[in-house]
Amino acid sequence: MLKLLQVIQEAENKKVAIGHFNISNLEQLKAIFEAARELSLPLIIGTSEGEGNFIGFKQAAALVKSFQEEFVYPIFLNADHVHSLEKAREVAEDGYDAITFDLSELPFEENIAKTKEAVKFIKKINPEILVEGEIGFIGHSSKILKEIPQGAAIKPEDLTKPEEAARFVKETKVDLLAPAVGSIHGMLIDRPDPHLDISRIREIRKAAGVPLVLHGGSGITNEDFTAAIDAGIAIIHINTEIRWAWRRSLEKSLRDNHEEIAPYKIMPAVIEEMKRVVTEKLKIFNKLN
Image (cartoon, rainbow, N blue to C red; front, side, top):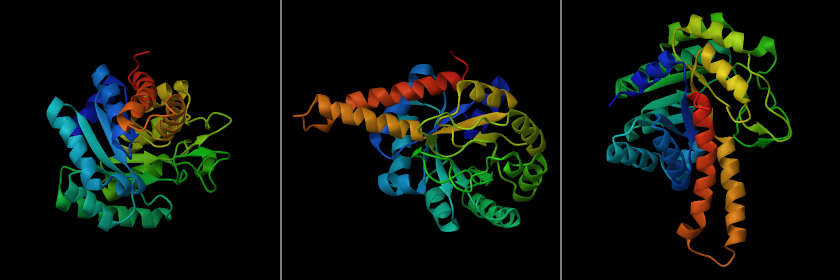
């Protein structure tokens, strides 16, 4: 079976993107995996620090590995938004395939210095782990938003510059880069998220020389997804839309089965709704529509 970096490179060659979907319970993992498997598409599962603390980092790694081995399937696990060397060590030793080391809120020079240290640290534990760095703060939480997160890089002058990306990659030696190109974490409740800066994505990919990752994919238009992939985005993160599908379908399933107490009778409808959302995204990312 191909390694994660090979899968990413193959996606770039095909001008498609790999879906990265976050989980915090087994139902989400089942829904995401079933959607990808039915389409025969590779998959990255993510756990943020909050999600990993809930489901268990070691347990998430064991669950993903069980799907990988039973079905001989290209499903991989990323530690999403790790902020410390201590947590990086934990997830590396637990068997994660990739780590997003996120110091995007720090000043640029400090981000470079500490990310460089993290790459060396992680590669000593396991040289096959992919390390992703971030430039530009785009908000914290994957939730429904009433307004743009305070401090998020949205204005053109605040977005990642190609020369910054080139320097960051050269000095830190990251395998993947997540630049600020117009997206935000979370999803606006009453309107689409801001448009992506497609020309900037193209320039950053050329300057950086490594695959690019788009965070904050929930709420982005289909047209922007397609254009961003053509410009150089290789991985797209989705979280808020899955959480929202989980919440609204769970409420409906509980209403429809108001006397039921068995989780395995309540949850199938919830899994199906999350699966529908993931399937739609995967088709867009792989130009199957």
